[in-house]
Length: 153
Image (cartoon, rainbow, N blue to C red; front, side, top):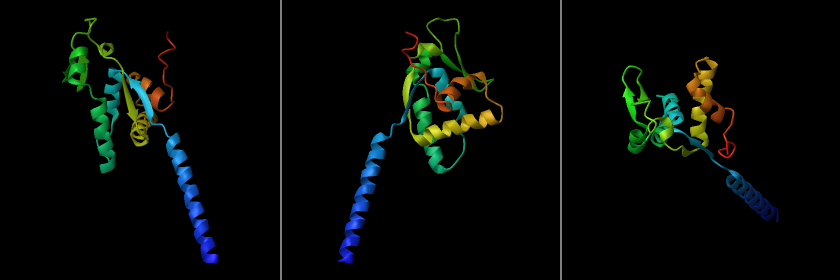
């Protein structure tokens, strides 16, 4: 009799744990944000160049998601700046080229991917090495301030 009760209790606990896990999983929402081309490029620049194997796999996925496509490169007029090691706009005076020529892209960040970016931004902040280029990303990822597109309308 005692053995039967223990089995029943164990089954009830297992069912309870499974139900709670399912509810928690159902409530999970990944971090989604629309990033313009400039913010995507800045985000690419702060990704860590080294880490564990698992971290580097996630960084590689982030690089693929954040990097501009060939079409976006052409549309924005991006060229490699060999002096700074960055990217600039070919003709900044051309009204049809530039960072805003490319529509913002919605990107979904998992918890670990978001954590990698938050850690990089916090490291820059702690070292007092944030620049104006990082401000928007810091507001989005660290402070959680996502601009609502409808606010300006």
